[in-house]
Length: 379
Image (cartoon, rainbow, N blue to C red; front, top):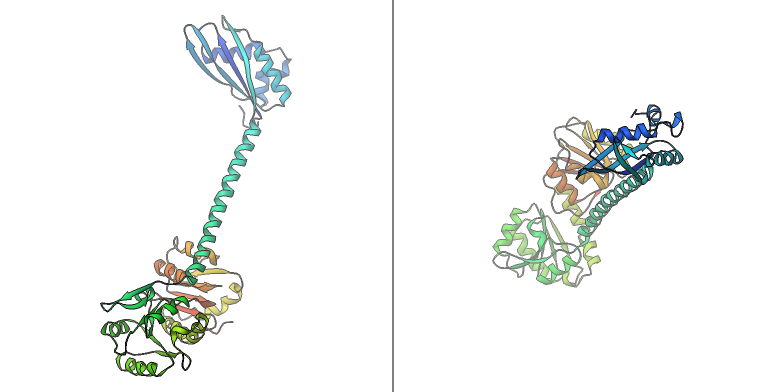
């Protein structure tokens, strides 16, 4: 069939022949015995020439000197013409020298089938989109949950000192006096506290402090806290000392009070851990300042290679997934928050420098250089 016609209908015929015939005999009977029945313009040969009838498909099955089967006539005419052709084919009573009978099995509207295929495909597209959207939403919810879920109470060393589960991974820790203090800090969202549990500083705690980059002491606001502070200062190097209000103990504080008291100290820890010199590209800070107006308030992340050529630009919600498929990213600038999940993904992808609006509570920087726009003098 010429390619110019668009099939609208399949005229489906069934036939029975009292003898053994082949496909060519069936097709010959369809063309030959319908010729002239409906006028010259309705001959199948003429209709094929003007792309109104396609190539007729025939299936035959022979059994005990009889032939049966079916034929499909593709047509791009209106339904009335298709019906006339079907009626003409039904009038065939011979195939070659044998008696035969043709019966209409049905006229199939190809457009309806195509519509169903289109609708089914559209449903699949929507399902895939919904699944992707749900996946992204779940990832976002996970980020929020991870940022707020409490850590677990565990123990450290042979003395089984009470501590939060983050003590083992965090680059900085909080030294408190007792188990109740650790539990209270967990309620406030700090899982990197460890209890001294006594005036004497146990050797495992001293060793742990040497292994960590930064140490905060968070002690009760009483005489016992004063004594423990002196003991700590003689045993380990403290970066910050925070005290509960005079006359109060850490275990008595509310979560909001703990957060307020530790706010300045924890921010100082994060800044000190991320303040590394930007090496290898003296123009990077300048590039960020120039680029800031373009990315600000877009909720997008932009990645650059070692020569500051842009590699990709995606919504912040997609950057973690995008980093799994990209190689050679060195700088990442985002209109968003630098989270621990982002840092972990960047570390795996080989990213070295990240710039964002602010930083979430971080356990470790994974040797990355982190900056905020404010630190670079951009706002």
